Amino acid sequence: IFYAGFSIKKRMFFQNVTTIFTFGFFATLTSAAAISAAAASVLHTLGMTPQMVLQTSLALGAVCACSDTVAILQIIDKRAYPVLYSIVFGEGIVNDAVAVVLLGAVDNLASHHTHLDVAVLLELLLSFLGLFVSSLLLGASMGLLSALMVRHIFKPSHDCDREVLLLGLLGYISYLLADAWNLSAIMTVFFCGVTMSHYTWHSLCPTSQALTVHTFRVAAVLMEMILYAYSGVNVWTTTLWQQPAADIRKHLRHALALASVMLVAAVVARVAFTYPVSALLSRLQSCAPESQRHISMLDGTTIMCGGLTRGAITLALAYHHFSPGREGMPTSDHQVSGCLGCCCPVVTCSACCF
Image 1 (cartoon, rainbow, N blue to C red):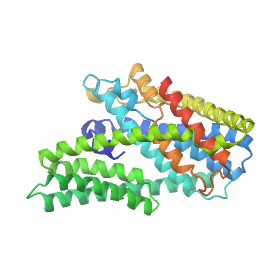
Image 2: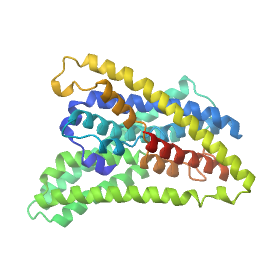
Image 3: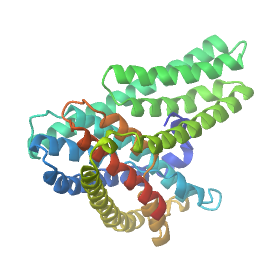
Image 4: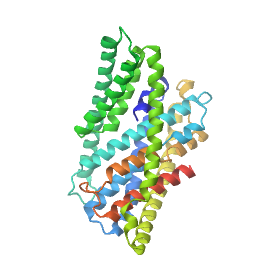
């Protein structure tokens, strides 16, 4: 996430910011609502209390609303289709940020609620906006601090090692501060990366500029590989496999049923949102500059498929959120395994199909 913010192409991003935020913000909330409703319909049959059904279904909706646009970006030629590439890339970043903040808002939701009503939705909205703004300000502040330190402390000598370490450590410190203050740490580190790329990177010496880009890219790819490997190994070490064979089959059926309805809900919500909104945006921007007239039917299909894949962020949030012992979350081993287990098929099927 830090590298995504650090490597963002700001000119194309802000040229298409309306389209990017429309898909990244509203499409994410639509997918989260559809997935939550589908998950709740299955969780009612698993013996959970109404409070737990509400908390778990909302959390699953936020977790599984995170998209992974890496696969679709590999087949888009950024030079031939710069606008489409910018939209898909920007939507993926905004999508992850919105989903993470939404999950934080779900965490802050009072545990005594048993169903959604106007009061619950208002509480969720206020928590979401508070987390979003606070995390943004903290990340931007740490990025500006790094720019000041580079310009006034390291600029005379331009020590490459210290400059690269400064950016990495301040990015990590922003993550730790957000986590300690119960903010959205991923949102904070993303905006820290965006601010560093705009203000700090241009003050680095040429060697440090190249070194930061390649170092953070290698670290990002390495962490993603480790996460996938950890997820695969953890499937076979969960306490689910210590249950009797009959219980294992029952829990696997529950997890697969939950994953199936969530995947169908995600597809339906994405299709129902993408094509009408793409047509509307194209009509509204028909008088815009040529660089912003972008969304054809084929482009809409590409955007739709890009928003259906799930990847590393989904797995990371699932393992972070559904860890045993979290307040308001499933408490028994098979319920925890079921919630974690349903996320792995969602990620696998979405990556293979779309």
